[in-house]
Image 1 (cartoon, one colour):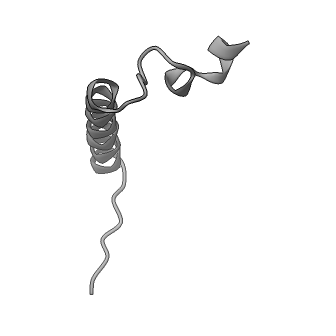
Image 2 (cartoon, one colour):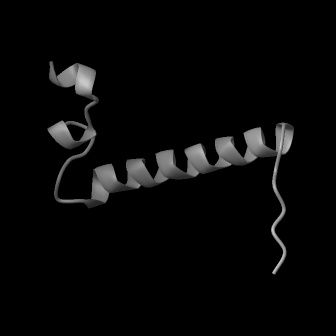
Length: 50
């Protein structure tokens, strides 16, 4: 098995794709989960809880 390390632009692009994927999954969770992650304490940041 060969592992290739990504650097520079490739790593940045992969990071953006992962972030967008997670953001899309979070949006799906807001509408399909029993907990409303968009409006409840689960979806808030620690700053919003203060």
